[in-house]
Length: 191
Image 1 (tube, rainbow, N blue to C red):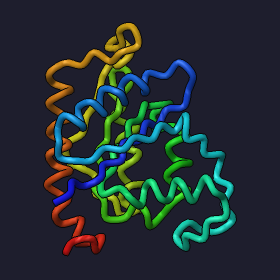
Image 2 (tube, rainbow, N blue to C red):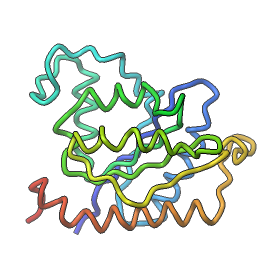
Image 3 (cartoon, rainbow, N blue to C red):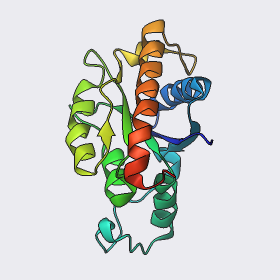
Image 4 (cartoon, rainbow, N blue to C red):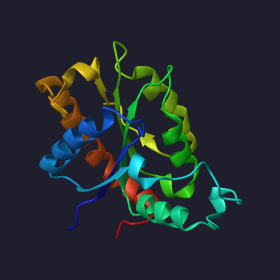
């Protein structure tokens, strides 16, 4: 039996961002977890322009090649993790733009949130994402990873985690794997 596909999306596109080392850490944890085939998308390199599709995404009548490629990546995923900073009490526009390009591709998948920031640990960004996710039919895990003072955990360009953050990531991945049984039926991929 094949493993479900986990798509890990690094949301920040800002120069000098700490999202890349946090994404690298999470990818390592997800691969060590072993429950998923892991694919990564970095929105900084994906380079989606500000929404440029003329048709509503629920029809999947895409006209741009970058949208077709983005659609295929998300459609192939069984579960998704959004790694997001908190900017001005919410999540970055790059993530909202990437989300809004698509509609049905998100449906009936578990969503794990890894948020980071200062004292609030990206909590407000994660909370702002929950109604967006619900509207798309994503099932947000009750376990999340929230990293406070994340900038202080970057040493020489590498995220230096602690046991609590690792444990939270593994617990979230466990929950996502548990949800996969029911969600795969809803997606119609169960035998």
